[in-house]
Length: 550
Image 1 (cartoon, rainbow, N blue to C red):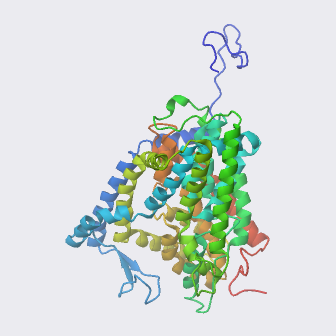
Image 2: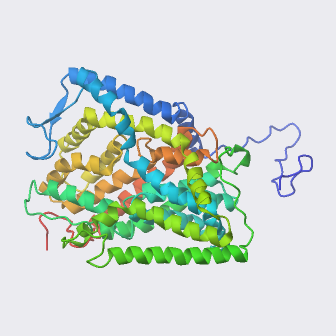
Image 3: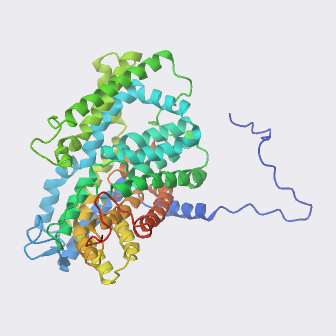
């Protein structure tokens, strides 16, 4: 309840007493971290709206490509002869989009750049299922049940931990967990952006930590293997080569994410002002106990979820399962249909329990209600769709011009030219990966260009490809939180703007910067302690040195 503006708050701190003639004590200065984040927020908010920013960047890339191409800027291609996309002359040259061919490519590709932008389809399909669960009241009831039963002191840690685990299901944490965490914090009377930040930190900053093998692991392992075979043609890298280190990293990210949320981010945000919520903001989440009908709906929805999970397991676990690649002996390779179709399964996993809950409680009575629920979920993504259109153009232009590949090779050559051969090389390698990730948001695209340089180079000085990949994943993950080039950054902006209208890009970056810095320092220290001080393997069958030492 707001305090009476006339009567003083009896719990408020008393004003400092002064003796007549003495100068009043100066107010305490803000902590240096608060002043730093205020400066970052101020500078970031000078940037234009993200939609305008991506539009300007797309134009800038077109102009820059014409200049670089005219100057003949090119680098040697580190990929082996015969590799897909490798030019006949063995170089990577900047491609101009200012000539006739480039302009034709822009005009003819404008629509397909947008429609084929992978995160767009992922978000839209997943949100159709989430919309049914949300409109039926299932998500609201589940949040209330979680909040009323879970110890409040553990909510932050649970949110960060769940964010890390969500990476097993591709990138669904961005779509599902981030908005749910904001709603949970709001229901608890805490700042919803703190919940959003905690979930975002777990999902994106902890992208390379997990208890299970995710969809990105086989992809990165395949790239690492091809790079390692430049030195050792028989070298094999399997998908679980970083699994042990990922498990330990999961708990590190949970602890660090909880610490940053509670000790830095929440004090910086202060109390939440509900007047800042946008018109499209989420409804209030009631803290009243669940009614018998709601409890019955949750029970039936839970049974429906178990039935869906059992069906998916039946189609996936047996060798004859329909969601496995027939005739493939390797377990991970045979699961490709399941892994690539995870978005469709997430849609079903939310839609079916949501519909069951709605039928049980009476919130969804017909197919029209279900259709309206899906339509309502699409209406909240208007800003995101507009942003994706311009972001897709920028990403496509950046890839076409090959400027990103040139920058990655130049940065890698610079680090290699320093001549470091000891463990200290990773103190430069990890930040370099983080820096490159600011412009190349795709983990696989970045690694495909840099792995052929760094993996052979570090193998020659005595480090295994598995250890090099683990170090790369640290740098790739920690900068995901602060780059607008990350595919889902616009979606996070849209979620945050539902609680704080007219939210600036600088505000979001300043809020996530402490996570990025603390994760980078803590994760690097863990890497050195785990690999070099303790000498532990980063994964099953993964040696630290090359050639493997007994």
